[in-house]
Length: 198
Image (cartoon, rainbow, N blue to C red):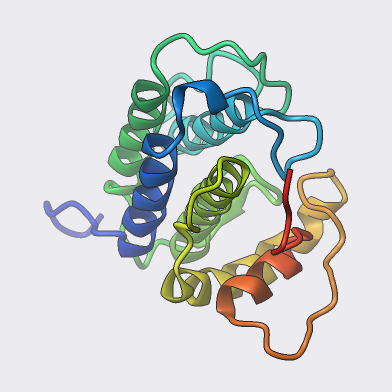
């Protein structure tokens, strides 16, 4: 960074708040429910989302990453759901706070391995926000993914998602429909059905 002030990444803060809201809204008996992430329960989506946040932090800081593979979540949490989410989001936020907004290359755990700071933090935020939506819709909550946040994330999605589809990280995009709002357009682009139900 160019100064001693921590960088404020509003998009990441908003995405983390969406994930926080979704996790807090899950009833005790709903952690085993199915989600839009095929074959994963709500618990597994949380593990994946937390693991991804820890992965971004590890790439930036060189510190330890997630304790288990985010793409093969066990379904067993090591702490309370809120504690798992908060620890991961804090690690991610603290790591990104050390990255200046004008940095041209930041190491990230997604292809191609390095992105500009603005795209990299957007990728991290996209992951948190979309999995917040997954958790919320699976447990009957209102979507924590706001139109404003979706508008900010769509250019990031357009920049990073196509290479990731080859790795199975995202399903093929769904066609746009008349009347799609910003949230729906983002979800369709990511291959998620906005009207998904368990």
